[in-house]
Picture (cartoon, rainbow, N blue to C red):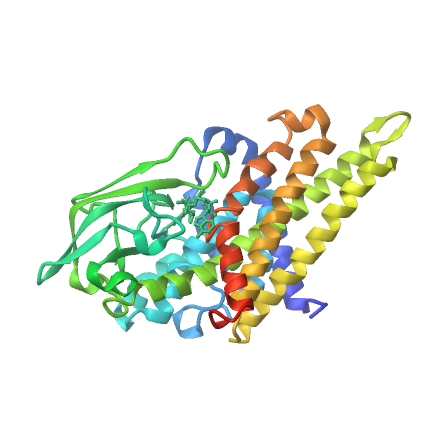
Length: 384
Ligand SMILES: Cc1cc2nc3c(=O)[nH]c(=O)nc-3n(C[C@H](O)[C@H](O)[C@H](O)COP(=O)(O)OP(=O)(O)OC[C@H]3O[C@@H](n4cnc5c(N)ncnc54)[C@H](O)[C@@H]3O)c2cc1C
């Protein structure tokens, strides 16, 4: 696959124009204020950004993971914050409910998520449980006619603004990871559930991140997603999908930082010539270009495999690892090329760096990707 179809080029162009015309003009101001624009999520929904990889009967737009990746990449070239919503409104909750939900759940939740009118989230991480998902403490206690939730979730994108999303909690501790279940919760006006925003993030300032505290919150029996005890399986399935969006975001950041570096290096003159004429700057740009192109092929291939319903966990983790490391490297080089201006918040180089760092953490850290990749490579686990 070395050429995109006309339709894919169109999709890419629509997202590029949206990022440049709708996000870029006010982005720096919104970043400073750490402002989240729910109206922009709706606008993205109207443009069909969130309806990929879903069947037609559930509102799918006939496009797949590859188109979703192309769009998220273009958005992240301008703002890594805004690519996050592709996961909250499309590849996370909607796709997971489409796969594991019953007819009532699909009908109730998916339309609002993909239109952008109902903000989604997924919550597995806790204060003492990150990479080791099965070490979570949150429990859902069966009270006969409802579930009662106790525990807390931390570092959850959209927690403080979310209308409906996925919660992973233990329903049977003794069964270890097979005792985790998945639920769809509606946290607004849910008694016993409080949310708080995390205002100390290094980057992603236009993407809300927060925590949930559950103190006996009662949720209905029908909130269970899939079978009881299926939560860990659902969670891993979901992460393998949301991971590709993270990889696409990283690809966008790597490309954005590269463009910025090239433009600056051609403009900035030192020692009587543009700095792009100095060999060491050329080497920096060449390294960034190689890593960016390699990441692009890896990310597009993984998305394409998903669209073919072929095993892709290995390729998805490779893509995520390569792209997020490329993004951090590119942003770091970009700051160096900008010299003092790279150290100034008046120029976007430092924002690319701050945002890129998140991509090495979310949807499984770089180490976790290495565990998945080596596990499949060494034959310990199958590629799914
Ligand atoms: C901006 C942002 C948004 C997020 N959004 C969400 C969200 O929407 N939903 C959600 O549930 N979570 C979310 N997270 C949480 C994120 O998924 C976790 O932070 C991530 O999984 C890592 O967990 P941790 O931070 O607890 O690190 P830990 O798991 O404590 O890891 C700490 C370090 O140890 C390493 N490590 C851990 N285990 C091993 C091992 N076995 N071998 C080698 N090294 C290891 C890790 O790679 C890391 O370097 C978000 C985080 C951020 C920063």
